[in-house]
Image (cartoon, rainbow, N blue to C red; front, side, top):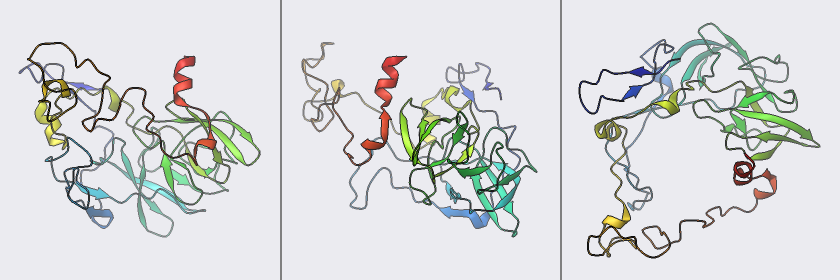
Length: 279
């Protein structure tokens, strides 16, 4: 799946690239699986900005995805669609009862492909089953953290994890970050690799394209006033702040631990940082 380049007709077009949309089979989504999506510009329910640099952008409808296909469900791919809310493509599928669902599309999904979910499913790409049934060494995606809750991990474009081993009641899975983590054997996963693998190679090219995505400009702390950022102030020279890097609220940001949840740490066999050091 190639990346589409543009002729350098303007400075923004020079180097700009877009994804190849040839695999998408329809432009019109299924109305019954759409939901209105309100723009909140990074603000929470009290009106405070909790995510900076958000706002504007084109209007979108949210696609209601089914992240936990019921056991014994047999679905047929009818269309491959674009989803503005995620990097991956989605597949419109129809089950044996005549109901429609949206699921994540992997690299092998095409119109007419039959996908089976459950313990009776064969070991084939796109099929969904428990980790207990998947052979060691298989590439998987859309993994459940809590059995029965639905897929939560490895869902973005081009993402894949690998089932490394099975020990007792747990499966050891190597995630895209390099982290090795334990999952219950009853947790389900889909076999294969999430589609749209060229997504990470796209060059945005222009500020306007970023704004249409709903992303506002980022300003460096060192060019702000002292009242606005710990790095701010000074005489306009290029010298640094002379103190360790901090967030706009004064928290240390380099080497500062941000992971607060301790209860899930026992499931991590090797952190992503250790994996990076071993490369």
